[in-house]
Image 1 (tube, rainbow, N blue to C red):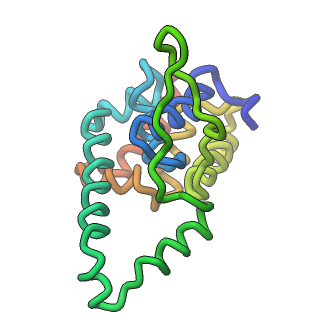
Image 2 (cartoon, rainbow, N blue to C red; image 1 turned 180 degrees about the vertical axis):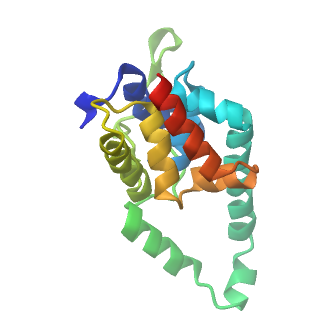
Image 3 (cartoon, rainbow, N blue to C red; image 1 turned 60 degrees about the vertical axis):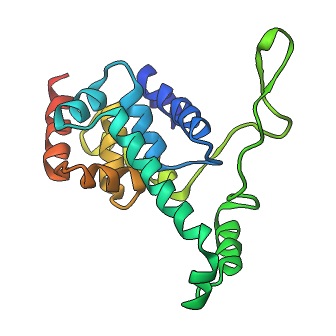
Length: 193
């Protein structure tokens, strides 16, 4: 499938991985794909998102706001237990769904000679969440529906919108972005390109 990606669209999964690492996440979610689209220098998806009022800084702040809310909940384990929520059971379910250690913080960055970054042993490619995989699949379907022979950033954005439930999309909605208008503008821009 990646062979049909445009050069700019090929940058998105790698940039999403970089965004996830910068945020200290051990996975690549829809929020990281959205950040990657916004971090690109141009492209249909980037331009349509900016025109709609999205920005890299606001989306990143939205992600970090969700993290702070989760940290507040996890800090108060006793209160959760008092209402019948077992944090160990929740952790077990998350590890079952996303793999062992999903809630563990990433290992510290290591630097080699001359201060160059080195990856820690065992820290390689971050895995895509099921939702972010679905976005990539839906991007292909969107390209086919538009009778395009390539998959561009516009198709990735359309896939993100069509998936409909990821954190990336929820942050856009919270910021007052109309998803139907965003979809319509993305399709119109892809036809004019």
